[in-house]
Length: 86
Image (cartoon, rainbow, N blue to C red; front, side, top):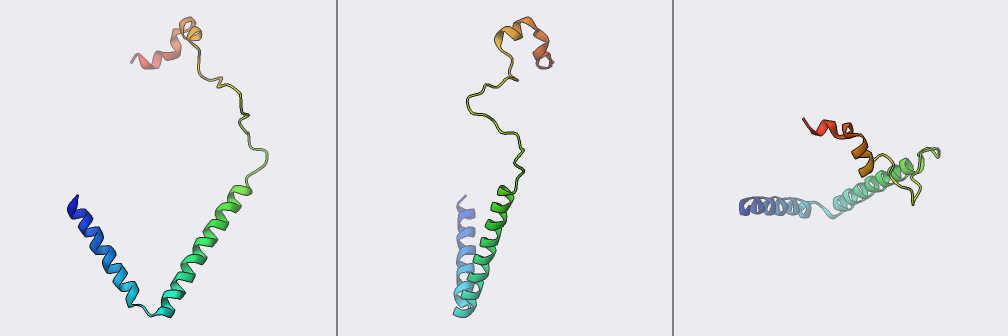
C-alpha cells in the first residue's frame, strides 16, 4: 500500500510540475476550457432530467409495497418460495 501511495504522489508531483511549466496564458486558457466543458456537461444533465416525460409513473408517498407476500400468504401457499429449496 505504501508503494502505491508513493507512486500516486510522484505522479501528482510530475503533473503539478508540468502544469507550473506552462505559461500563465496557457494555464488560463486550459482552465477556461475545462470550466466550459464542466458547465456544458451540467447543463446537459439538467436538461436530461427536466425533459423526462410528465406521464412517468410516480410512487405515491404513504403507500405500501404490495409485491411482498405476508406471512399468512406464505403459510397458505408454500410454493411462493419453492425456488429457494433447490
